[in-house]
Amino acid sequence: MGIVGHPWFNAFRRFTSQNEKVKPGVVYVGHLPRGLYEAQLQQYFSQFGTVTRVRLSRSKKTGGSKGYAFVEFEYDEIAKIAADTMNNYLVREKLLKCEFMPAEKVHENLFKGSERKFRKPSYPAVKRYNRNRTAEEEEKMAERLLKKENKLRKRLAEKGIDYDFPGFSAQMPPIKKKMISKSDSNEDASVDDEDPTPVCTPTFFERRKSQPEDNEDDEIILKLPPTITKSTPQENKVAKLQKKSANKKCKS
Image (cartoon, rainbow, N blue to C red):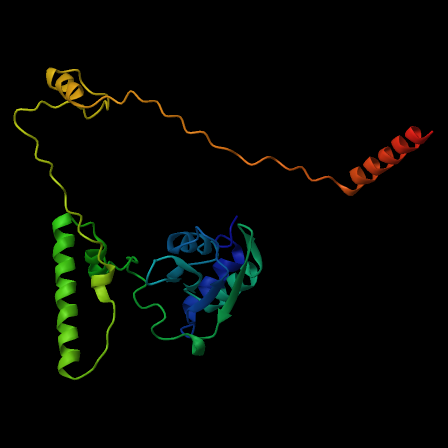
């Protein structure tokens, strides 16, 4: 049986219905994990009593949760009980921080717009600038930037300011001119696009015959310097000892 169906809760409700001085209470909820949003918070805290409003702090740029919210209960006594019960409560590997907020600390515009569903700002100007453009649109955009840059240079020159800067013209990629090779109408195509091997056509054989044949086979001989092996100090000592022993044998 939840708190709502408890006998003392029903008695408290009857008492509050007779008392007109009862005010709503607000609970600050911090260290919220991911997944606890407005609907989940209202559903979870409704086990303590009637939740009138919920305000989750969100980022204006991304729309994501900032990790804290404000929950308003119908009665301030219920809000105090909920804050004491849920403080340091482990939810999804995070300890919730709940604190009851007195009426004098609650701002009048705290729950302003809480009844509306949050919508992420669209920023149409940013979307227009970042959209995918065609080649023609990119060329027009580059021309506009260059015109503005030229106007700025003229203004600086008219005012007598000698200032040179690279600008957009230095950042623009050079326009690649496509060289179109003019092929004679009498010559047939001898190279396929997919296969680089030449096609054996009559014109191909005529070209091969017209080219001079190079029958000379000149070989280029490269002379490499002799490799010099460096001997280590230990090898030098061994060689000297061998020479001394050989000289002693010859003398004897």
